[in-house]
Length: 347
Image 1 (tube, one colour):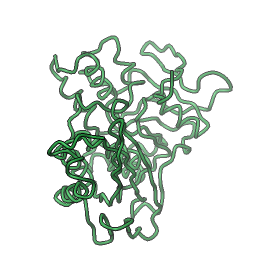
Image 2 (cartoon, rainbow, N blue to C red; image 1 turned 180 degrees about the vertical axis):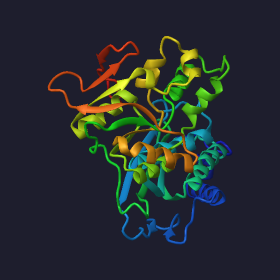
Image 3 (cartoon, helix red, strand yellow; image 1 turned 30 degrees about the vertical axis):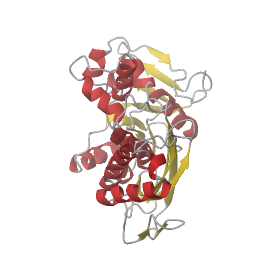
């Protein structure tokens, strides 16, 4: 049993904690909407948009597995816990509507820290028009756990269309919505000691702690006619392999076209490609689109002040044997790409 030190969850109690967390969400503008009944009843109630298709996604973050509190601030942790779910919604070309959050607590957590966690979570929810509609608080004797579920729906003007992983076709371009390797480089810094030691290190750490879900980019992909998408959570090679497998295709990627920032290349001159292609947690969107859709997408990105798409390769027919993905080096040589996805239970 947790010691009931003043200011801890054990001293305050479950229901008083819920009231305080709800107040933080209300302050952030992420706790109420005219069409929604949120925190305070046995279940949340919302009215789906007529004609829209719904999506739902969930993620769990466990202390010691997905984050370390000696590395991560509570507000950043709240931001990231929601961001990883919003990224899944973005990859579907959808918009988030509501979220539910369950906390597994030891009881020894400081109430002030949990309020900060909800400030980070609530601010991101409000920025994307989502409402935190409820959840649960339970005892977790071993360690802290955060479990977030987000409900979304297709954009009102999308005719119910969503992006999936199975729409890529030979001849499609392969592109990403932003830079690769920043978050993995930030994690490498943390593993190496955690203190910024060179110009640009702060940006690497920020990319790891506070990823930005590309919700508006997903909408632009729907409008421009993208054929498939996936968010880059487990690394380019692993996530591209999943997309190719679902679509029954292969891919050729140009190493010279990968948008890896100079700060990653300069900081890790011998590891930048591995960080960009296998590191994961970029939470950019990896997508395919017919060549004719590239200019319409560029125009939509420019109009919405979004990064221009970075074309990194093309979809090809699935090979009869061998690796579905090949990497073309700057000298023109090609090599197969083998493996690369993060696996919670991998050895």
